[in-house]
Length: 133
Image (cartoon, rainbow, N blue to C red; front, side, top):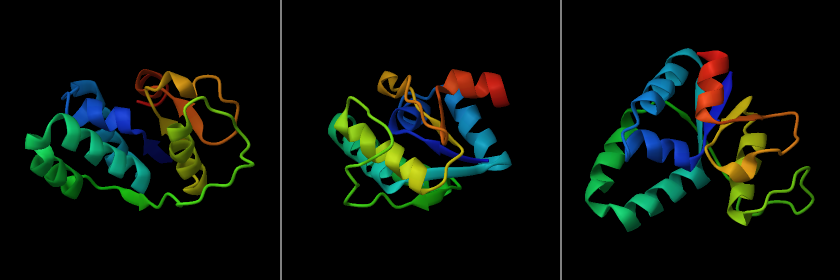
């Protein structure tokens, strides 16, 4: 499976050191294809730079060690998308997952709940671990 992580999931595993998220990320990278979008990486770097600049070097080391496929988030996203989402910033995350042909998008963002699209399957970390691990 091709599995994309949202920024909040990466933050939980990296900055907040969630053991379950770290284990899930490791499991995905060993058994499936882990996807990260350029948008999510940029957003992750921005959040860390703003809230915890002292760990920027550790973030770079983490991303260099993490085996993943980089998916480019286009600068221009079409306006006629097959979904609606409250937060305009989340459009780039979901659009990146669609363009990258992700099978699953893992996010803790409640704005993604109830979005009815066929692919990717949108799941919380807990839902993903319960169903697949």
